[in-house]
Image 1 (cartoon, helix red, strand yellow):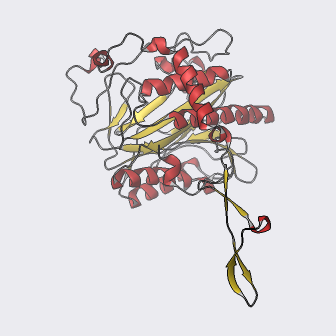
Image 2: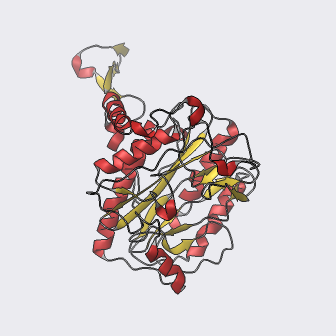
Image 3: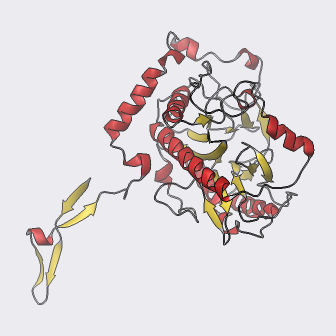
Length: 389
């Protein structure tokens, strides 16, 4: 949508005059610039699509009272929480139709091939074929689209369970499997990590609130390959500390992109990540790392985000992996909630994260999960409004 504004025309020797003839009219795009991908869909069409998906999955919450939605897992009884954030009711796991190709763990929850890699204690990073690389470009583009859909739906009042249902249906309509679903028995289709949750937050019935920061971690599986990416969003007006944290998390990822090229030691990435975080007064989570990805959801290399790490490996053309630094407001220490998935900061302060899947090329890097309309070789400068909902 465009608006027409009158242009001030200067004629030599006469000074400025205002003219309304058609030739002098200048079209100016509204603030926000061009929109790409799912963001180009008209709002009413997007709303109708999400409404249709929620209606199709309404059995997830049908019959639950408001009080029942607030009930937490009995495993949390007696747990001393790190902050006033509490888990709410988690609805049943949704079933993927038979016509959608599935990963090996979809029934048992056991990623057998990943366990084999660990058992063999190999340090060999896979070399990908041209076919592998094309398949990864395709699945990463779909993963990006699913994240963009889910994040566009995100706003105050929406529940994490609704986000999960929108993500699930977006995957179904694209014929892809949501990789987290039943991976090591994870119950949902994406991770929704709010405030002090570092990662692996299980979507529940809690509504998102103004002032929250919310990370959406999306992974999808197609034709035998996985993609992985995530972004953190600010809900409405957030305090200065939250603004600083989200910016720092973004910049902690962006700073390593120029280093991704053949010959770089994987262990070098953690040095710049740590330097960026510490300069802003933040800390880097030490427990979780980036990883190789492709035919396995999590494989080699392991990509540490901390300084002076001992990560093994040198980047070679065709290597594909994620970088996903988890940046905490203060301390780096983490706890694991009794659901055995949700990682939280030990001091109860907030955590933020951004993630891309990268491929090493002959001359540098290709960002496989880049936003539509942006560079695939460098991350766009940080704009807080891109990540505000």
